[in-house]
Each structure stands twice: as C-alpha cells, then as structure tokens.
Image (cartoon, rainbow, N blue to C red; front, side, top):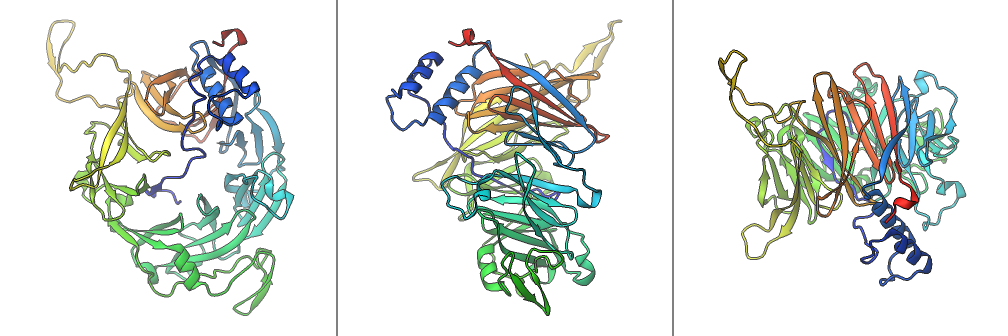
Length: 524
C-alpha cells in the first residue's frame, strides 16, 4: 500500500489460539511426558508442546535476554521469519543460531536494478506442486527496473523471474492470505500518465503456489471517479479511497471476470494489440488485460476522516473516525453488514498528547486501542434482545508504570515565590514512560509492548511480554542501547529472539539482536 494511506486490514495469524499441555507446570516433567507421549489430551502435537515448554522457560524469573550481536548499515535493514536483510535485501543473516550467521551475500546491484521491496513466502507442505523448487522458502522481490524475482530464502539463488513491463513502475507488494495471491501496485505518478493521464494505478495479481498470473488491473479516474487518491486489493476486494474521505469496496473477482480482455499465461506466447511476445519475458512483459470501462457495482461505502478505515473482527466490523476534524482521536466501531454502531462502540481516550492514540483489529479478532499511557484490549460480544446487535467490552487494560500521579499546578521557587502552571503536561511527555508499539507473538500467544522514557539527552526503553489472554506481565526485557524518541524504531519478538532495528534521522540504520539465556539448573 502506498505511503500515507490510512487504510489497515486484519490478517489471519498462523495460529489463532494457544493450547496448554494440560495443567503441567514443571518443565522437566513436561519434557519427559513429551518423549513418552503421555498427555491427558491426545490432540497436542509435539510442535505445540515445544512452544509450551519454550514459553514456560521464557517466563522464568531467572531467564535473561542478552545482546549478542550488533550491525550498522547505510541502507535499509529488514527482518522476517528468522532472517535479517541488509543492503537492499542483497545480504542475509539467519537469526536462529545463538549469534546471527551469514546465509548469503549477492553481488552488488547497480541502483537501477536494486530490490525496492520484498516479502517472505513459504509454501504449505501438504500442497502438491509440480516442481520441487516450488516448496523452497523464498523471498518475493520487486526490483527498480520492474522485475519480479522469487529468491531462495537460504541461498539467495534466483528461482524464478518475471518481467513486468516498461510502461509502469511497480513498487508496493502485499499478500492476500485467503486466496494465496500476491498483489503488486505501481507508484501513483509514473510514466504511464504521459500516454493515459487518467490511469493512476496498476495492480498485478499473481497466484503464488506456484507463481502464475491472474491479471493486471488498471484504476482509471474516468471509471472510478476523478477524485480517486489511493486504492488497494485485499481479500478479493478492490478498495478505492477518495479525496472527500469516502471509501468504496468493489468485488475484484467480479471485475476480473467481466473486464478481462484476454487471458495471459506466464511463459506462453501472446498477441496483444498487434505486438507478439512471451508473457513475463523481456521486453514484452505483462499486458494490462483487466480494463473496466464503466464503474463496477459498489458493495460498500462509508465516509471517514483521512480515509482511516479498517475491517476485521468477528463478525465483520469496521473502524472509522467520523469525517469531522473535531472528531479526530475518536473511533467508531460499526457492523459491516448494516453500518449499525456497536454498543460502547465510540472509543475516545481523551488524551492530551502530541502523538495520537491508535486502534486496530487484533489477530485473534479482538480490538487493541493503545495510547501513550494505556492499552485497552476490547472484544465484540453479541447481544440478545437489544437495539444494538453487538457490544464492545473490555477484556483488560495495560497501564504504563508512571508511579503515583502528581498534577499540582502550584510550585515554589528556592526563594519561596509561588509559581502557578497555566498548562497541563502532555500524556506522552518524553520524561514519562510512554507506550511506543504493541505487537503479537502468535506462536507463544504473547503481546509485545514497547515502553520508552527519555530524560535529558539519554533515553531508555524496555520490552514487556504480556499474556495475550489476561494481560498479565510475564517478562520485562530492558534494552541496553539508548533510545532516541526522534528516531524510528522497529521491535520484533520471535520466540527466543528479540530484534531491535533503529533508523536515525540521517538514514543510518542499526540492528541489535538479543537472545534468551538460561542454564539447565535454573529450570523448574
């Protein structure tokens, strides 16, 4: 999705619930039972039992996280699925080992051929595929000169390459979980505007297992409206945003079926408007073969402030901020079926802060509403015999550790002169512990909460691990490096590994890796 868009959608986690191996709490007993298979419930797999053991070890008071590795770079640093990427994805380290180890390093690419964006892709093993290489964990990447590459995640070898064409510049990549499709999106101001000034976006959609073309769709202002500002494809829906704040949903499947000019197959010869070539090969590329000539039926539309629209939950609901500037910071949770507002569905923290609070659908279909000093975990509950069909209830609240609240507007100088303060302090003042992010470790069913404090020049931060079901804090991990609130930070907790990626204002990047440490005699 393009930079600046406010539309967010909920993806499906790898596992939506966390199972406990009975009521066994002793790790040694749990390990012994695993080898013998003696569990009261036969449905537990060894994988889940291993995760249960790991979580119990992690939550031991004596278990520590130590910084084991640091690396700096002048270019982007990324992390996904146990791999750390440097040099625009040209260099890859595995973070699975006690210290990150180099997996591969590609020959340096010239600027015009560098990888612009990428995402990890792993095929389910139970799916029958034609070639053995289709099962290889891979990195799907888009280059600056419009090649789509499938790169082996552990070796860096190019497994497949598709040329996208010259008349558009692709830069954004997203993933459709339900349909297992890949969506590529062009930049808005590309060279295509010279020939067709009303076409502002192109979407190239691929099936991934194996990689095959669905089609290329154009977004034309003549068809969708002159005030279109952004668009995206998600879960078979084409979502179009307008400068007026309106968001409209269309059926991509219906558009592709009714507006496809000609079916194109990767690797096969195609005659397109008098030009013949092989689809996906240079220089022919991929023709735009899905061309709507009139506006498709609108499935759903809603006006909202700054196109801030999210879909998720169960049953389906959406979150918006009403289209009024005075409503900024207020969120409405409504039913996707009939637009009805849920009971207690208006959420407003009424914070006095520079940074706004944020809200999103959690992976387990709950809702997380986070501000500078508190995190509310909410749940949608169906009501009976009530005007409202659903109610928003509070599961639990996580509060920042700020000590006793002191808000005395009157202070005295050393000479005894009374001074009255005419303004309130901000909820996100740097000298107070402030929440910076909330994420989810789905394999261990943990909420990862980052809190930071900056006094004078030096700032500190810590990562708190909370039980996703109760909100109870289970582990606090202090970060050894200083935390500058003016820098960009990304924190990823992945089983026994904590990754901190920092981007400074001068575009210098740093990567810090922490590993879990404990000895066998500490296990209880």
